[in-house]
Image 1 (cartoon, rainbow over the protein chains, first blue to last red):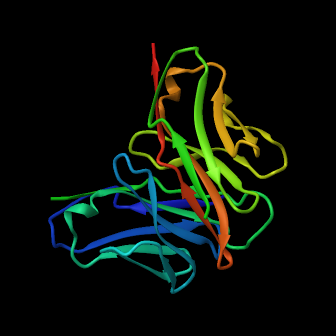
Image 2: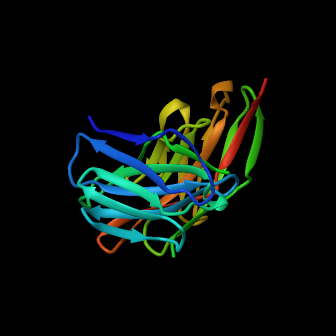
Length: 116
Length: 115
């Protein structure tokens, strides 16, 4: 069976410090990978998605970047955090091949980032 | 452009009462629609999915949703609310772009169940 792991679960960082959130998927190959941010009262905002190693699509201009150094690894980074980067970050995966029927999105447990 | 709108950011029901959470979608092609549930400080868990096979979709924990094309709706219902149903619920639409899938979520509805 497939599993998705995110870490760290909780992070408190000062403004201007760097960030690295990591996500890995087990039990599948060539997954599509996604980073979402959840801010209070704003639902889930798609930040980045990736269909393969080194292939990153950005949805919104922002202070964050993403990388996919390995097939099942997805990293969310920032060089200098802003207060507005605080939120709950969720990694998710879905099967890479387009198929008929519902290819569902499966989420990790999330990483809560507080920038002070 | 594809999108979903959830009416009501907060819904309160009494235990044992009907749960109705509203979702309307906008899509230029037949949509794939989903409902997810989120408990505090956790990731999202799939409740059910619509894939065009049947308009009435049954999910986990007694939830179901009906796809109504004429109303562009995919409302989530449960006949009798339980205290454990208190959570945040998200409607989502999936569409294809550049050879892959993107999933767009609504802003969520927080369900409160009153004893």
